Length: 208
Image 1 (cartoon, rainbow, N blue to C red):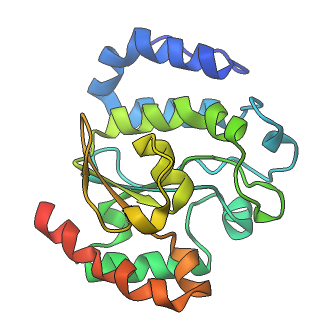
Image 2 (image 1 turned 120 degrees about the vertical axis):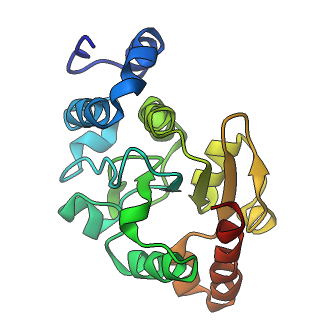
């Protein structure tokens, strides 16, 4: 597959993918690595100025389950992997409740760079990364995408509904199901969210 030009815009990335996606999916692991390498040099939004590094995602490109959060935090920005801080420990509890571990799933974020001071990602930042997330999902071809928090859920479902009304409701999309959940960090700050968050693990057992 031809290489993507370093510094390509979001629109150019999307156009490149449309032209080459059919050949790319036959070698998902190597194609994923290629796009990751490209993303490491991305400057399509202002987050590139303040990040330590791009946090692309981790897990097998053959995973049937993908977890999508909103953006890296401080720990992830320093370490380069998603959900390795306190929220990551809560996510590990959820995985254990679903009889899963990290080796079984792919974990990514809507936005690949940390917003300053862990603020919410802005619409233009989400848009700048949207092509990368689309590529990840089309390469992996998961059965279920678990969206963690408001921004991931609204982005994947293209809805303005709040996360409280979406929490734990399995949604059927064109190519996969989406299970919106509270963000693991929200269950730390609001303990009332912890039980419904963990209980939703049973829904993954029904579809796995």
